[in-house]
Image (cartoon, rainbow, N blue to C red):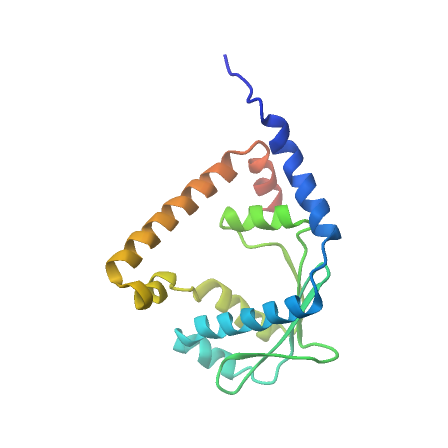
Length: 186
């Protein structure tokens, strides 16, 4: 006989609470601006470890890429060096709009290892290049960590993080209705 957890109400209520908080929370403009600056720096750091990615982006120099999710908008332009810089422009060559409706559904998709649902508008060739980047460029966190603390401790921490992510993915996959959501996306 299966027993129900006394905290089952919390697992049902938590997504609603998070979604309501996300809908009403608006950080100060300077926090958003600095967060976007740090995000672009991080993306460029990851790109610099992949010469093929930089070469592909350099061929797209000057194109206007707009990433949109709910109230957030990020405008990027590839540089001749094959990196990304923040843009501030009207119109776009490529707009990628994340169609996941809630932060919880977006986090769930990412935790399962799925790509979020995205609506693509604009230049097909540029979209193909961005898709290649998403599929092939990965951050080697262990390598960056090894520069700070050494190879052995970095390997141990990275291995622990991989195990934690595997456990999280397993947990998300076992949640009631997870199979229905994954099946409906196909």
